[in-house]
Amino acid sequence: MKKKKNTLLFVAVVFFLLLTVNPVFAGGAEHETFAAEKDTTSQENVVYYEVFGMDCPGCQSALEKQVKKIDGVADAKASFKEKQVVIEMKPGAKVTDEEIEKRIKKANFTPGKKIEPAKNEE
Image (cartoon, rainbow, N blue to C red; front, top):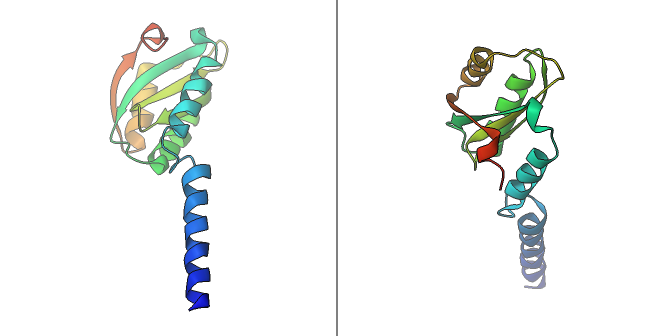
């Protein structure tokens, strides 16, 4: 009986740690991080696109990897919760909308419209 109680206690502690530490389970932690990262980049080198079909952190990662392959892209942050990707360009880079949309499709997602940065500022 004591072994069963110890096992249940262990499972409860692991579950609690997952809920409080892991951003996937912590509810809003990923969203706050994503918003903070958007605010630290220069708005003149940043573009926002709607992306449909992302529904998990793995989707975010797959999209980010594809977009970062574009010559001229410095960084990309996707959010399945906000259904968008924020792309930071290297200074002086000339990246077309068609290139970005092609990469979004290559990651098996549906590109939406380009979002103006002023609409994302609060």
